[in-house]
Amino acid sequence: MENSRAFTLAALILAFVSCVAALLVVPEVRCMVGLDPSLLAQDARCKARPAAGTGIAASWRSGGGSQPLDVSAEARVIHIRTRFNDVEQAMESGLYGSVRKEITGISGDSAYATIYVGDGEIPKIRARVYSGDRRTSMQAYYEGGELLFVYRTVARILPSGPSDIEQERYYFGPEGMIRWLDTRREPVSPSSDRFRDRGREVAAFASTLLGGSRTDDPVIAF
Image 1: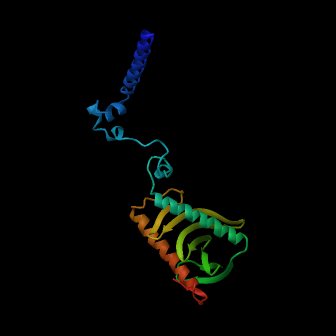
Image 2: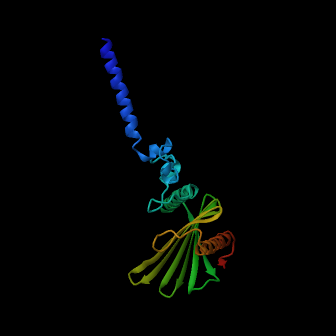
Image 3: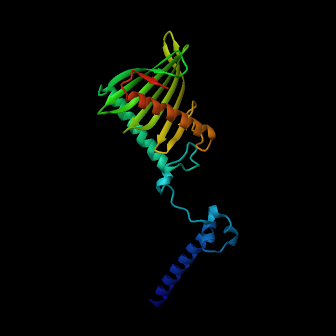
């Protein structure tokens, strides 16, 4: 009986030692327990790694999936898309009234704005500028008087009807533009001068639209 117990204990100890030895073959494990100093300089391998898919930032990735995005900006974009869908659905349901005003002071053959009104606020303004056979449309979306989103399209006017040739999307937060998808639907770097300049330009245009829409003047002057 004693021999049987001793054999069982020895087998358990041997199994435990084998598991530990197997784990120590893994470089990351050797690094963490300090058995492989050569790995200590390799931060990417030596730092403790969170489990895949954990953490709020893990779900916000760029198109290539390699660079984490600003979580606050992503949350804002999700809110903007929800607001966009709500406004468009309300328009389709006929819940908004509309007012049309001419636009002056910008280049083009003619221009006008359609202001949509609902529940005492202006959720959307669509400005259209005609120049030759082209029509540029700027659809600005607001919430509580705050600019959220501008959808810009350029269409060529054909006998069969307008055909879009350009599309751009501008997303805004309280601090200004947070995302710009260019005509290829690719994001423009927020740190670029191009991004900053376009953000100010689009925000100023949308602000003038909103201010002119709130007056009794039948014309929005730029």
